[in-house]
Length: 213
Image (cartoon, rainbow, N blue to C red; front, side):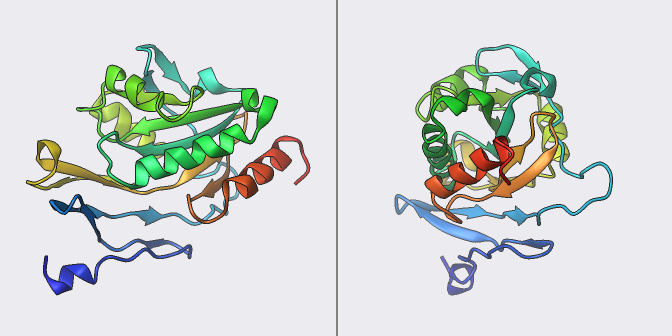
C-alpha cells in the first residue's frame, strides 16, 4: 500500500452536501477495504421530501414486501451488505443496542437492513445474517434493479469495487446512514453510528415517537 493511498484513510463529519474520501481499512492483514461514503445533509425541503421510503423487495423469509407493509411503524433503515468487514456489523450492532433500549415500544419500530449486494445476499443469506444481530431486524434483498430503485428512493450511494483479495473478487462501497422514517413513511432524520451513544439515540427517537420533540 503506497503512502498516497494511506493518506486516503479519513472520515469526514457532517456538512452540507459533502462526501467521504476513499478509505483503506486493513482486513486481517491480507487486503485493504476501500469505502466511499456519501453523507447527505438533513433534507430541507418544501413539499415532498427528497428521501422517501419506497421499495418492493424480498424479505429474509422469502416474502415480497413494500413500504406499505411497514406503515404504522417508525422505520430505522440501513443499507449495507453481509460481506462488509467493518461498517455494517458495527452499525447493525449499534442499531440492536438502540432497539434493546426501547422496551415495549420496540413493537412500534421496524428495523430494516437492505442489502446493496443482492447477487450474494439471497433471502437465505440475509436470514442467517440478521438473526445474529436482533430478532426484530428485517433483511431485504431483491433484483439489482429493485435494490437500485430502493437506494435511489433513500438517496443512498453504493458502488461495486473490484478487489482481487476480497471474497469473490469485489467489495461494495456504500454510504453508512441510518434513516429514521415516520409511520407514514416520511423522512424524519438521519443518524450515524458513533455520532452519539445508543442510549442518546434511543431517547431521541422515543421522544419523537411520543410527540415530545
